Length: 635
Image 1 (tube, rainbow, N blue to C red):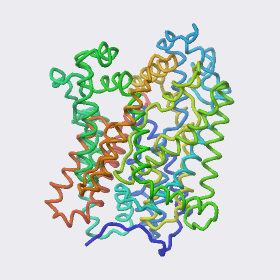
Image 2: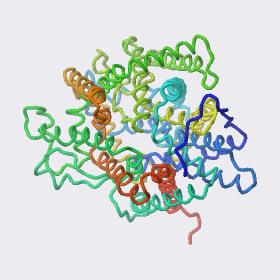
Image 3: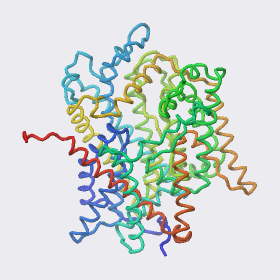
Image 4: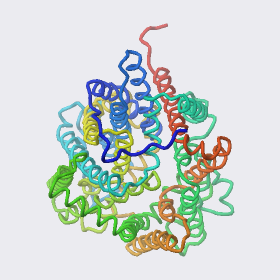
């Protein structure tokens, strides 16, 4: 019987993962999948990590096996992790093209700062002046872009270095010292294991997962790409049915298969807790606040019957939830520090000791601390040079202090439940409480961690599960970030030359770029209120709920409350799909296979499920690109 993959122990030898074949694979993936990932984002708002890592992993595993020199699992993991980083990172030049839309759209002309239209306050290091020919040529490769490209490239490089530094730190703390489980790490390691070892029992369950993923993906993504969707994307919207009874509630079921796959990894109790938190905020509280003008008069006046999930979420977030949600993050941080203060303090002491007296062979801890501080402080200096007059201490505390705590929360969250919610607009909330007046300081910031470190730490766990030297994994991550910076520029320039952005060719930009422009303008003109009392209520609520888990454990009740707070950030359609996936895996499928056999094989099935999704969507995107291509012959 196959048992769950075990993390490499200190006595086990960690093997190298970098070779010429790995370098070739990473370069090939960059050329193939960074443009595909960017194109997918421009048409649907999504990125393609599952697509890229699946296809590249299978392609190179099979090619090297065909030529008689199969990859070792350590090599395959470095390929896998590097491609995952490349395809989940949006090239920073995306926002340069967005800024050209911002300065030219009529939307921004009606927002004023001291009587000046806000689009006239955009500095040249964010976008060229409106008389520049780049707006007609639609290209990033022009001398007028030099200052913006330098600032963007340097900021991205500092971000990449800070992320790698923090990821090394928390790989040591949460993977090496606290040995958190990281549930999705076992799925990723299972994919690598099954492609390398090819054990019959593993392959059969893996192929079954592929077939399941292919069928589901065809009904969602592939059908959408071919123009005949069988399921709506991203969700079934049931607001039109429920608005008579629970106005303002976000009721629906997400069709995203990756969310379903995440649910299959999680225990039912965790999935139920997540749904409880999501329902409490986005259904119960939203209904209460929509039913009376006494709570939030501005939201009450803007709400109307016929709004969709997306429109309710956008407006209610701006008018109600932006302050509490930032408070939730603060409360989670405090709760985690209080609940795990002994393990945190022990791990931090070990980390500090290892930095002072380097002895950790697997991870360069002193280097990671220097890398984080250098890049974070460097980003603060760059920011203060570009945005003079902004309070330096605010930028410093945000980039060094807040980033460290957000990264810590994200790494712990990935380690316990496998995901971490996106944090919208943390910098704008911080700027709101400063006296800053202007535009650039609202949309450009020093380095601030948004939780991506959690995923990098999860991959750090996979490096130990596959007996790979973590240093080789982080070298691959650094190469991935560098290639995003190089290939991403060429790809973004190509897509902009191909067609204006936004346009019908890139439909998601027609929906979201006007929203982004409106939000940026509302923040910069301080028309979105951030209320300190609401921020404090959010922090206390999260602190109290997460602390209940410790109390439950002391009385022998094993009910997780940490996922309840994470559910505050997840819309009910996604939380419900997570629960459906968990119920399918833990009740339906486990009974079909037998609980013991399913527990030993589920990671291979879920790895196959994600592979099936990736293959189907990848093929669908290829056909879509071919169908949109122009043919040079007249017949």
